[in-house]
Image (cartoon, rainbow, N blue to C red; front, top):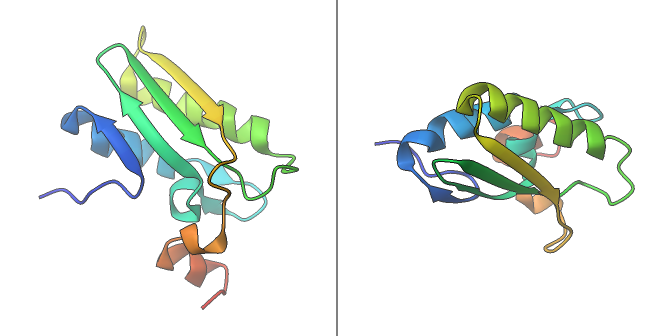
Length: 112
């Protein structure tokens, strides 16, 4: 049985794995850890025609926000195919906190 998404996911179970894999390919350029393990993905809602992703950043002043959003759009478009709409939005509530990181991210960053 496939593990649950590390964030709230609403959509077709068949797309969950490819969406998580696509998001794990997006690396925060300042921390060199993917956005899923950093806990930046708040939630994903996916229908047959559209996928919406809500992200937070480690800081509202993060200079890499636009780049991260663009990479999420590109990675999802590559797995969901032409004609599938991808919308990525930034949100600040709840605010990111180090507790959102996975054990893997904490280990990679030396926080353990």
